[in-house]
Amino acid sequence: MNIAATGFVSEEAGSVASANALLLRALLARGCRMHFFSKASFVDPRSVVGGHSLFHFTDVTNACTDAIREHTQGVPLLSTGTRMLDVLRYNRMVVEAIRRENKSRRFDLCLWLGDYARGRISGIPTVSFAQGPPGTDARSVLRRFAEIRRLAGRGAAWKWKLLAHLRLSRFGLPRFDISDLIVVGSSQSRQTLHREFRVPEGRTASLPYPIALEAFRPGPGEVAHKRKRCLWLGRIVPRKRLDLFLDGIALAMSRDANFDATIVGREGFVPGYRKLIEAFPFPGRLEWIPSVPRSGVPDLIRRHDVLIQPSEEEDFGSSVAEAQACGCPVIVGRTNGNGDYLCPSDIHLQTDDPQELAGAIGRLLQAAPMPEVSRAFAEATYDEGTVAGQFLGLLNRLVSANCEVET
Image (tube, rainbow, N blue to C red; front, side, top):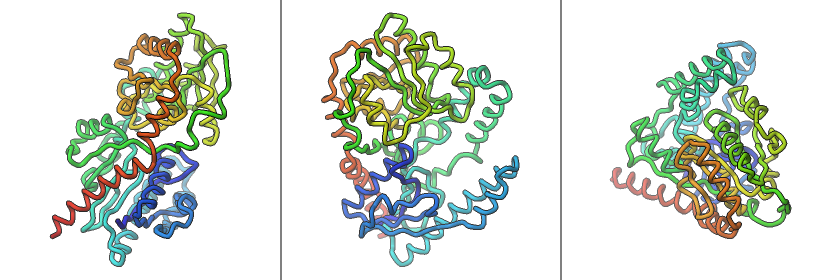
């Protein structure tokens, strides 16, 4: 299969980009020819694929609008407009570059990794492997407006409310009709696409992200400790429900549960959430670490006994899968897409009640550890070759259907 691709790929960046790096390598290993289009200073996968003979790269540089954006960075409102212009121009240039190359190479399909397609090339299918439905953070801002106003102040709360409405308007949403297939990380995300955006069910699919199983595994790095520890790992934004995490562990601690907790993550776009941490009733049993380098995450997970991710509308939390790969049980929120990918050691909350979370923490901390169960599940579910094979099956069916239409 000959694929034109663009999007976000990096071994050192966040969960989506690193998963895309694994997927890109696995598709090449299965014989796919990949031609990647992007600005080299922004995304350059050549270091990821190591000069693979089936990989080609085209540098798409929007030098003019880049320069305009850089020179207006400090100007309110104008900087927003020039940034949007820069992104719009870049996406158009990527599509045009693919269109030109398609005349000689004849691609089987166009793949957007970590983003929704911003254009299409006549005659070939377009696939978006997106980071879930758009606007999840915006919807959480509207749901949790009172909390944001209390923590960040009235001015910041109203600013983010207005921006949330803009994000969810037709000016802030991508066009779904450009993609012949939208792949997301969970059935939770598929349902949101169907319910909120009327995307037909036949044009969506769900797959887990691949995980670097060699890096995330039980074993060296484990530290024996008398007190058990629970871990929060990720951005501190309204959708991630830090309030529910803190209320749940506080209830569990008040019942004399013998454990401590760690929060790893920075405050996100809404300031003020540190106030929840500062007001925690058992400060001596809670540690907050703003950041840990990506290379240090496996050892961080191995030093804990339970990972808790109570997020709302989570597409696919890579830290949950990485914890499972390290043999660590997980607790996920009611609308967390990782509920699709749990083993008997894990718990999927059915409500947003801190009492339920406290009970789940108590049960997992008292249960006999079963790291081999979590690890076996992770190996069967998140292996890059396995996920790439499932993804390639979706792509082959789409290409075959397109060929039938053409003939």
